[in-house]
Length: 146
Image 1 (cartoon, rainbow, N blue to C red):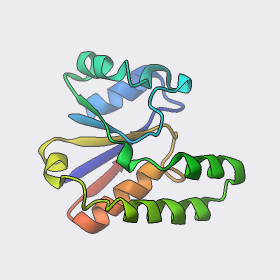
Image 2: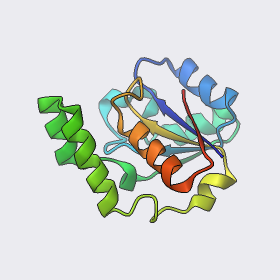
Image 3: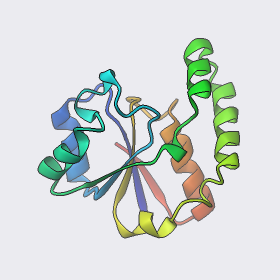
């Protein structure tokens, strides 16, 4: 199974939607805390379903906040920039949420899926932590960061 991840920061709308379309993404799972933020631009929750339908040939949109960090974890990271602390706290949060046990693996396998966050690159982004956990627990998964 393939799992894609993408961040919208530092991408134009053309780049963002072209990457999804070119890679055959059928379902975009938004794992942001605040998908309605002003900084989201073309990636605002209200607009994404429309753009996905028109620009990618019908890609579905789903907001799945259970895969987002808590506001407290995010606020602390924005203050202290301590990645190791963020990493351990987010891993513990995913444990408490029973990730991936609480997810429907079949739903990920039925459609080419991509996890959406805001960070431009995955190195210091929770989408990488989520995708790596899914691959580690579920097995037989390739991760592609767009």
